[in-house]
Length: 371
Image (cartoon, rainbow, N blue to C red):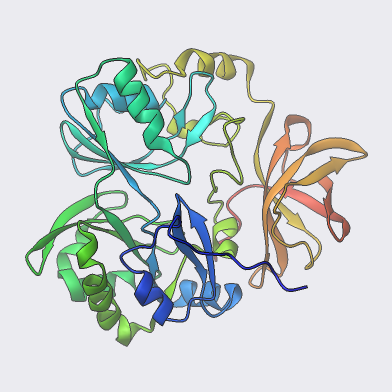
């Protein structure tokens, strides 16, 4: 049966790079933050191998920025997250769980501190700006919350340093992991961060004006030709192998950061002012009842769930699989799931109920082996 076609209209926002993406022969899109996000070009498996071996350019404009700026910017940012931001320096990127008053996950973005009183929140797929604006208005904070005209362009893969050094100069090689630097190119300032939604290394270029999109795309593509650059996008196989979570798939508002395995990014006791702090302290005291785990599934026909696949153990409910993909490198189906406490120890044998029938599986630690 042929897969349904995604109908694209004016309600789906194009990006500054959409024309170049279409010219490159994109074969799949999804919608993310009301924008087009390319999913694959050759095939998911071919793109996977190329990402691991060479370098790719990704249109990730859908990672919209929520800018928080003004005297109360630090206070508002801390209200959003149980991660302690009191010592966050300018030029730093932080991965921050954002929670509501119950401790439920609303987003898992990367925050960038541009100035003492100015932050960008590079969001996952949810209308987070309305939550941030609502808190700012309801608490009468002296802060402006907006969506600036900033579009991230990712360069990912083991040859990313060589490509961007040909564009911005060798100073990019000195940018440390989860740090960013303002770099000039053709008279415009770009924030360039060593970050990205893959485990293969690389950068995200924060393009400061939509009109510059095709120009910088062309420059990166030209610089990457000696390194076999090719368009790509966040790759399902590589993401699951690396244990990179997808908000809305692997976690939702029903989950706390501790259930999502994000406890190391929470300094809840020190995050004075976090709106979900009291609720999360109770979770810490009681301990999570379920948590994100990896699974190896002994079948190639599992497919990626549209709705979660139930997981059982000896006939008892044990959790659910939320993302899955066949790994040609590991020669098994790798998966991410939310598993109940009685069954989450590595080595536990479980059963996954797929559209093609029951499949044997084993609970494992994330990430999967990268070598």
